[in-house]
Length: 306
Image (cartoon, rainbow, N blue to C red; front, top):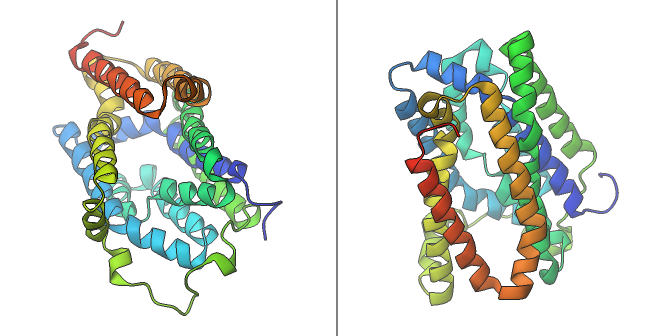
């Protein structure tokens, strides 16, 4: 099943369509969030994203173990479907929309399955470039989609934006069903449909216990955690912060996201490989963390739109 041999490009299309659909909803989602929780907008946004993230943390090891046993394609379909299920509810019932976003965290681990898919179809020396391409695709999906969503919202209303986003999500699901080939051959799977998955494989805390046994892996995990922690906080509230605190309009937010997306694409596809070859992996990480500190400090102290 699927079109051609499994490749990184299948994964790239899946990621692009999923986040393009959500990017379209940037402006309508900010409006609905403020209208639904006018007095506690930031608090409720944090709670919704927090519940979603915690559920993803609990479910990611289980979904990863199941995809190792039963293949990637079915779990790509599952994660994309449940991640996009809340989209049509935005205008129908905002309360159900935000409730579904929170609960969808159980299955909102598309990136985990995508990275496993990429690992299946690439050699070890190719994976850094392949992962960079996937990350760049995520950024590319946000270059134009917020601007398109803002334009459609201003010209035709939020309902059309939600409809278009729903159609894009449906195209993504159909693409997985019809075009994405399975990347994990049956002979490579440690179990079959009739085999059980051990609790240790499904336990998110079991992985943390294993990490402690290897000092190198432990240091890498701490670095990633401390890097992603502020980044996750920024991502969950940034668009709302730009509108409510800095005073950006819909067009300004869309333009800002587009510029950041373009720069991210350049960084992931051009600078990353050049830096890793010239200064090495560790120094590349240190340079990236230094720029992250500068970026977050700039956001925190900035109070004017310029």
